[in-house]
Image 1: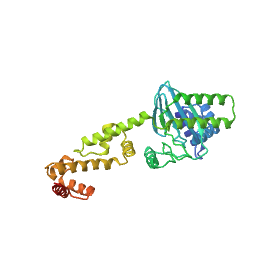
Image 2: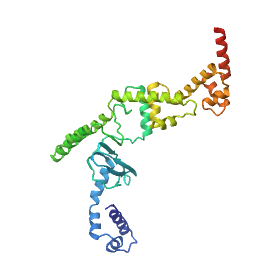
Image 3: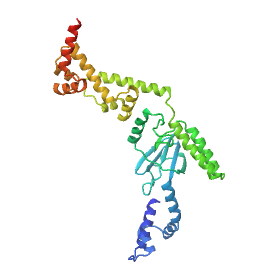
Image 4: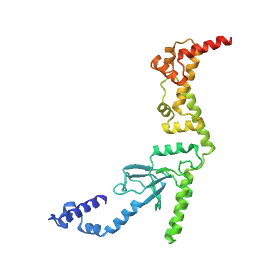
Length: 323
């Protein structure tokens, strides 16, 4: 159908040109479409304009119930499973065109709604920055938005899809029964707010315990790998989490940036090796994953204010004085 519409558009543009000598019949024959189809397309211009207007202004909320939906929107492919939702923002043509990517016997609930206030599309990086900024304030919720706005990811899993389905069924029934727009708007707002509320619940004790376990495992991993040139990306790869998520989680639980903690862990080990072993500065540098003694000594002095040799010497003097 989309291909036929493209042909109708080309025919219409050709007919409108002042120097065109081809008739509608000839153009339709060349394009392989019927004249009746073309004229129906022309007569439906008002309907297309209205649909375009709605697509520019309407959000679409899809909640999957059975099978899998394979859809492309704004040139982005989406795969939506049962219990998951997809929230498509309004976009101008041609970015607002939906394209099925794969056949499926899927079932879902689907509503259009518009917002009377402006909306902003945020990238995942922008959302992470907002969340990090909101850690020290009480005026934001768990998705990092202020009290006058809501932030809902484009795609996600609905924690309680049955409740959302119940609200969608009620809204469908009231639309069929001809309820007034004010009531329908209220119910649509309630539906969106319910989804938002489900996504922004306070973390359960189970989630908190899971985060603490990840944090504890990270501490052990850093301790065991101090001899390597350990980076935040290495830790994220080992645990299978997003690098920025792990950094945010570690800072939230420890109060210290993850990168800074890795360096501090190395310096603590360096202090031990300098005071409790007879290893040379070069040997200690190798043990801590540095390429040479110079790089290690420069980093050590930057962190402690002393060179490794000066620290070892001062410790020996303090020990002698104490004895």
